[in-house]
Image (cartoon, rainbow over all chains, first blue to last red; front, top):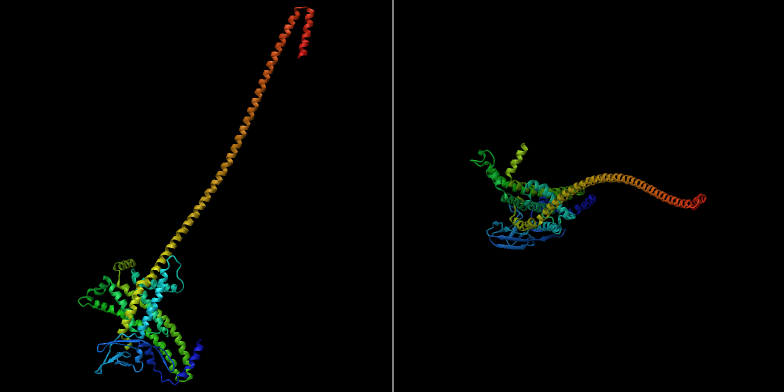
Length: 353
Length: 165
């Protein structure tokens, strides 16, 4: 299989010989970043692209709605253009009459946004189909097999291994939310690894998405945190000089409230981005070495394919591990937000005895 | 750097799409599955408990059965022994009764024989007496007629009696 792939890929250098030197950075970031259209694939003469709606609201010129194919030629339409530098690189900005650039409120259904919708629908279909099975069966029936059985197995595993020990006594209340987070991340991660439409959007490698997921944890923790949790933050059980007159520890604890979701956000984002970047870089090896002639190109292509297969296997593992870790940390944070003071003391006494 | 700045538009799309789907799944999706898993594990626990109890009861029944069988065997032996004893008793009793009845019959027969003998004796005596009276009558009658003749007559009459007998 590998040998055949290597042979097939050995012909790519011949075809790509005329191509300009490969801009690896452009390719990698182009894939990692969000875009206004969904690029499917290219032939020598034509790019196959799904056009997505661009929705903009500018303080100066109001609402704008057009399809992304208007941006095809030079990235300019209706006074907007895609900027290539600054903090908004790759985004549409409005050029005002006085020559300054203004970033509009960008509500475009971008590749990532569409990816989110597709993943959400997929998740909804998978879980609701599974739930439907349960609606038609009783607990005395035989356990489900096949796909429903697989989902049930994963659900039971996450509940028993992650949620139950991390959240504690009230785990039943939080299990659905944590399971939803887990399955959304898992599906998005796997969908991100499949390069063909409708998969392929780098959803969990987008910091807005991971931020949203972390915000769910953040709000769950801080809205449902009990009195004990807030007491531990504002008046922790430490020597008095650490909390008054300068609230040193409360200050650290309050920062901690925000670093927890931040860590969640960055961990998932960085892991997925790094994985994608490595795979893309390995793919680029083929095109770089192709320009160096078949003597270097052919063995390097083989090596690249080998490493890509390896990396994809690893990424599949990472897809699961990151979903698992996100869920576990969320569960731990929720568990910490509902401490059981008296019970904890009792346990301590028992262990001391 | 722009990779690290969360896009507001993406956040809003995420809020809409993921918000709706998450709500649906949290409300109706996952509780369905986790509830069923919990209920099934409860059911399995209960079934195991019931099976354990049933096994225990079965073992109890087994010992009970064994005890009952033992008891029954003892009873059987006892009944058999009793029956043998009774049989022997009955036989002995029957033998005794038969003996008694035989003895009674023999005694009755003897008594009857004795009575009949007495009867016969009585009859004989009466006859002898009658004969004697008759003989005496005839002797008396002949004496009245002559000595010779009387003696002859007595002889004759005795002969007659002898012959008549």
